[in-house]
Image (cartoon, rainbow, N blue to C red; front, side, top):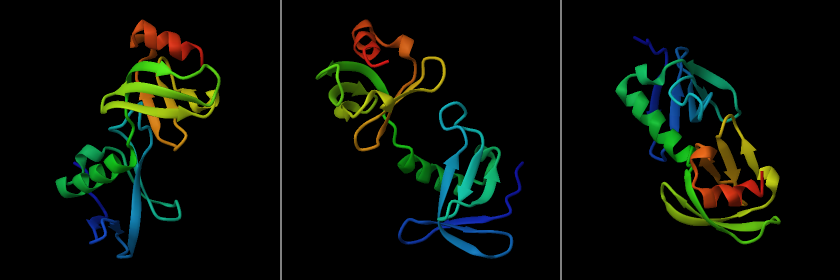
Length: 156
């Protein structure tokens, strides 16, 4: 059982408010996962507006339900990351190029500015950043269909 030494609430503007054991309230804190892809359920930091860590949480699942819900809602909006399931088309093999893909949230298109915007994380895990900074995830490169792999291999 985890004993929390802080209080977490939300104001009328949707900002998270952290009140530590010293009674000082920090408005607009941000929860940040230590390993969002490799271990999303472990290690979480609560950061103030200046990027200073206010609290470290080893296991977020052990937090009281109200605090856990506030943190999960904040993480959901912060970590918007559609997962690419199929690559339909790529406009050109030079960059910038327009990509049409199927994701877990439906079909979409994005612009890939450069090959350096495709990052290998580990194994077959890839992150692709579009021209607006949205991160697309390919969970397993080797599980993609042949057509998608052939298109993607031109950029790797």
